[in-house]
Length: 235
Image (cartoon, rainbow, N blue to C red; front, side):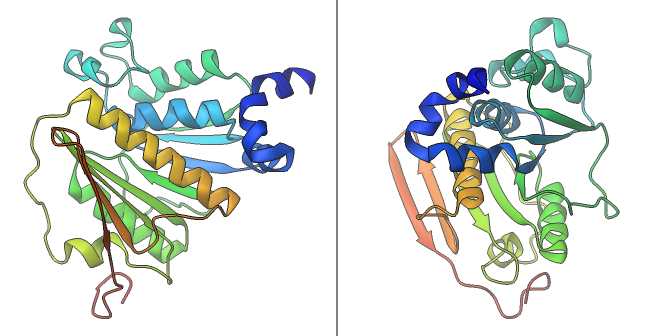
């Protein structure tokens, strides 16, 4: 217990012992272990989230290493789940890990997790995860990055606008191949922050809000959202 206190003392200075205890009891699923997933996993490890699920079916590629800092050069060719698990074990061995080395599908069950974090790099998986989260009533933090730009939306099923309310019927919007470390690290930090705010019921959560940032222009904008009564997922 003394070692735990020292590890999390800077967290406890703001969140209190009770807040840290609640984080230690929390269960969070990180979907996608690329750039956004790297930052989210590292931040959640620092917060001391008790149980972290790691979902990805891909392997580490050399082109990933400009921004996916939980993976190393020697991890190239290995599964991202095993590489992320190694990082977490070395960084914070107290955390319980659950590995899902698979692609998200309609049969995946989110129940059992308090928060799900969308770190996918394609809209097909993002929209599927959104649909599953709404159906199962699990809070979801969406994030996306494109070159110097990024966005975050936090979704509380049955109460707020979901990702499908924002994207509509668009099945696969074009996404840039550019993924820059500064934007990825900033968005992943905001996603982890939103997760902690949900778990601790802190104010300022991005419910019914879309946060957009442009690091090239240093512009941050928050756009108000409304639940679409005709949404095919949550309407």
